[in-house]
Amino acid sequence: MRARLVCVVAVFAAPAFAFDYSGRARGLVGLGIDTNPRRDFVSPNTITPTDVVLQGIVNLSGGLQGERASLAGSYDVGARKFLLLSSEDTIIQTVQLDGVLWAGRSFGFGFVGRARDRRGAQRDYTDLQAELNLQFVPDNALDFRVWGSAHRFIFWAGFGSSFWAPEGGLTARYRFNKRHSVTVFGNVSFRTFNSVTIADPSEMPVPEPVVRKDFFAMASVAYWYRGPVVFSLSYGYMDSSSNSYGWSLNQHRVGLVFGAPLFWRLMVMLDVNLRFNSYPAGIFIDDRILTLDEAGENLSSGVLKLVRPLGDHFELELRYGFYYGRLPKNDFVYLRHVGTFHFGVHF
Image (cartoon, rainbow, N blue to C red; front, side):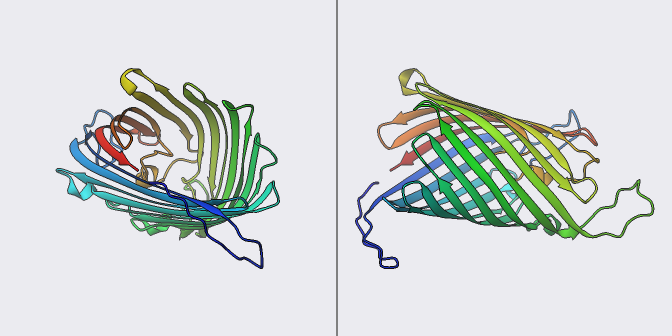
């Protein structure tokens, strides 16, 4: 669904702005099998229950684009319903609004607001972020953005893991040409939690507990090729250092993205994420925190998709996902296979 809208906006006696409007709607419904619907870490050779899952996703997005300003918004809602384990039913909603006002040809001042809410399966949380950014685009080859934000994460299923944080970071992308580009990303976060510290058991005398505070930092670099096929290879490093014993985590991240057309109008897409975790002082991390999202930020994963369009507005999708993680303290393993068949519609 696309339309054209011309509107007049007066801001501090500025001249009129002409905007193009675009919007899109997409829906996806699927049926599949999940071999670990509870997302449990279990001892080796322990079998987790398997269940049939019905899931659906709706995405609505739209934006105004002008010569000196733009505004875009999106809303996503996804739901998962299990046949036997109804306690694992989940609904996730995400809304985002971002805009930018250009001062001259290269500098822009922008804002981003994000809200995400998850309910179900004893992993209820609300994640809120408000960001201001400065963008620099001197030409078609370089994009640069530096940003600062306020972040509030509320983990309703375990309020002690909730935090607030001032954050900042930068993103830079350089395009060698239309097909080859490199992206660099980095961010830092100073997190204050709704809990107190756990003392190191080897430390004597035992110190008085204080408010838990974590320093979180991540840096990554990615190469992208966009041509007859799509290919990306990335590496990142994450350091989450805590003043609470057992909550520090270091992680190396390797990512691979590949997409290519096949016969019969089929498209194959592969997304592989490898996570190599180390815990400098043992581990007390709640396994529910490690398994909050499908993306598996703290878990190794691989997702393979086959997509077949049907005309201009419909598509069929066959998806297989593999997720793996291990807790070194007790050698518990997270293993999950998910296979689904989807029917999609988009306008």
